[in-house]
Every structure is written in structure tokens, then in C-alpha cells.
Image 1 (spheres, rainbow, N blue to C red):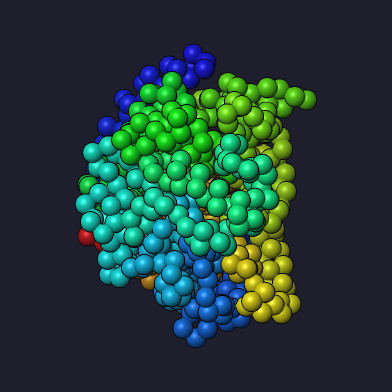
Image 2: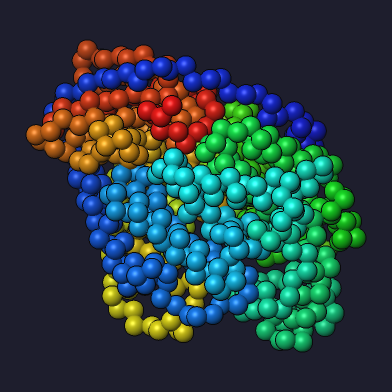
Length: 623
């Protein structure tokens, strides 16, 4: 353990006590832009991509869903796995509407959520509209879809009722789902949900997941007669694995449960009720205390009494989705980034980020250099630290984007070759967030061709998936539970990055933090107005540089700009660039309306006071 890790651990509890100041703005100022020009290529392509996603989405939905918006699939699906994949298949539809997609997508996305919920209730995975029992990596995949409804219409009564009901599953006062221990500040099992904590798993629970887990390291290296992953597919030997999991993994808390802070923050931003904010701060604080108690190392299993390693002979490793199994380091970084940034959004206190930093600093201190690259351990088992390799730094870019702290950039420089991100390397993959590093390189002044590259890349992926959809002749019995999410043609990464000045959300349950957000004042809705294009092309020390284009040559357009996806920032001032004399406007609030004359092309520097306000889903004109 290095001194730096010990020092960080010693101060972990002194955090998250600062409350953001109140929003001072009473009226939304309006500024006018009249600098006409030929629209740039990126703006035309952005509009084209936005327009083409709706027919692509409809073609996808029409092929794979019934009239009642359930999936055209099997009549039965056993185990507790699968509902996440149903929700994931359409997870970004509500986000597409929220950034400016057509109103038809809003209604469709809600119908699809209802259809998946009904279908997987019949299969047995969903109870009372929430996953009956699963872990928070998979809950996170499911409820990202649900969180985006907070951006599209937070006043919808069905949405608000569900938000409060779902959050109640984790407050600790719901006798039907006692997932949370409010005294010890722990979630009582890694498998939890609307039926409460699941301390004992059955063979049927795991039936659809066993072939997948056979490709991962074993959860323990001392299971009787089990020496390889092949045991997952052997009914007799699998029982030995299941017995070990039930005895050592299924009681108590794990870092993966930090992803539940997104559900509670979602409830806070929907209702403004302090009990959700308090829950997040107390729960994240509890995990920081556990790091402190464990000499600066994040423990991955906490017993029901609150003791580290209570069911693992005192070992701080060998928990569910912990340091050893199945993904190791990846889950420890991801879940702490989600939990830490959620707490930071509420408080504006940078000490909230010490939780993910402690994980990153720990493995960095244990790293070794090979061929000029720093390799860090990805697993810890009975034989110590192992599985050395390069770190997946996507989450580190997320951490830096939130903090903008020099120390987080230094972490990136130690762990990543930043030159690798100067050029776009489009790759297909789950999550629609493969290019966070390339986007960061762009907004810091590298690769000015990035906007066209990412928009073309995303559009080409949409076309590729449409081609696969049209050629798909598989039957429901031949389709696995991941079939549709691999074909979802709504690719939003480039749009989110360019429009909102932000990386796409952390896939397994993170919320979408951003520099800016847009509303259409005329339509009283979320998203850019039609025929308006926006691109943040620089992050600056005190704000962002924003390009706005009115693609209409005959109509004036108004776009309302919000500082932060959740109005968490304030706009200090706006300066029009490249026009003399420069136009300055002092704003001092989270919103400003920009009036664009026909065919206007303008570039603005928007000063931001970051994390100045309590986050909220409330629309700018709502009381």
C-alpha cells in the first residue's frame, strides 16, 4: 500500500457535506444572433442523422415486436436473467426523443417499456414492474431506459409514481422488499429487487447464464472437484459452484450495489425530496468508511453485520462481481465512478470522488511497465494480485469530465497513451459509447475532423444494423436474449457528444452528465428545435465553446440552453466569437434563450459555474 493511497483513505469521510447554492435566476434572458452564413457540413450531417433515426427505429420495432409492443419471442424464459436485455433493446429511444427526436418516439418508447415489463412479468423476472431479483450491473442496464424518461417528460404521472415506488425498494422501510439496512447502511444481498434480497439461489435462477459464465474464471479456486469453467455446464459440478456461491457471496453488500445510487438520484431529481439525497450521501459515505477500514483498499464483500469478509474467512476479496469474479477491476472502477459522481452531482464536493480515485490509485501503485505501457492488476484472489494488463480507461475519462481536476488528468496520462485517441477508430460494441477518449481528444483541440468522422461512423453503424435486420430470418427459438439489442439501429453516441459537450453515459446504470442541454421554447419540449444544429467543439477552463446553426433560410428559431443536463451548472456569461465588436452577455443563471435569425451560423463561448445548483429534471418553464 503506497503512502498516497493511505493518505487518501484517511480523509475519505470528510466529504459530501457541502450543499449547492440555490438557483438565483428569475427570468430567462434572451440574446439574438444574426450572423448569416452557409451552413457547415457537420450541421447538415447532424440534421440528416437525426432525421434518419426515426424510420430506422420504426423498421426495427415493426419487425421484432407485436401490436402490443411485446417482443416476438418465446412463450417461456426461465431464470432471473433476461429482462435487462429486453429493456436494453430500446434503452436509448427516450433519449433520442429528449435530444430532439420526433414526438412519435416519445410515445413509442413508453409503449415499448410497458410491453417489455408485461412480457417479462409473464416470464417471471419482473414483479410489480421492477426486476424481482438481480444484481445492479443488470439492474443498471435495465433502468437506464427508465431514467431517460426523466429527461423527456418528468411530469408524467405514471413515470413519477413508478419512480417513487421503485426507490422505496431501497429506502429500508418497505416490508415487502427489505433490501436495505438503514442502520448499517448496506444493501443486504448482491441479488435484490422487488422481492427483496435473495440469499439463496437455485439452479433454475442460473440456467440461462451458465454457458456464458463457463468462459470466465471460477468464482473461487477451492470449490470441491471444480477446476475449470467447464463445471458450469456439468449439472453435478455446477451444484458445487452454486453451494459455494450461496455460502460465501449471497449475504451482504458489494461495491456493485453503488450503481443503485442512480435510482435514488433519479428519484431525487423527480421529486426534490431530501430523503433520497440523504440516502445517497450516507450510502457512499459507508463505502468510503469501508475503504478506510481496509487500509485504503475497496473491499468487495461486506457481511450482514457490516464486517468485511464476514462469510469469506475475513478476506476482503472474493465477493460477487468483485475483485476476482467475473470481471474484476472493471466492475470496481465502474460502480465507484457511478456512485462517486452521483454523490458529487448532489453536493459539488470533490471529495465525493475519492471513492473511484482510491481504486484507480491502488492498482496504479501496483502496476508494472512493459514496452512503455503501464499494466495494472485486474484481479485479486488467494494468490494475490494477478491478471495484469492495460486498464480500460473509458471510465477515467468520465471521471475527468466530471471533475476537470488536474489530478484526474494525471491519472489518465499514467494509464493511457493519449495519442491513441487522436484518431477515430470506430468499432461496434455494446453500449453506444466506444469513443469517449476520441471525443475528449477532440474537445481539447486534437483531430478537428472528429465531428464528421463520428457522425459518419454512427450513421454507417445504423445502416449496417438495418441491413442485418432486413437479412435476419431467424425464428424466436433461434434467437438468444441479446438478439435485439445487437440490432438496435438508434446510434446516439456522436449526437450526444457533439450536441451536449459530453461523453455518453456509463452503460451499466450511469446517468447522462453533460455540459449543456437544449429545449424548444415554442413547442415547450426537451431537445433542439427542428432545423437547429449544435456542436460543442471545445471544453475550456471556464466553460465551453458552442456552435449554433439555424438551417432554415426563412424562419427564425429560438433555442433555450440549459447549463448541465440536470440544470446543475450556472451560465456566468456568453461571448459571441469571431464577430467584432465582441458581444458580451452576463447571465448568472442556468438558462438562456438564443434567438437565431434565418440562416444564422454563430460561435459562442459560454462560461459555466459548474455544480452550482441542486440537480433537477424540472423543465425551465415549470414552477
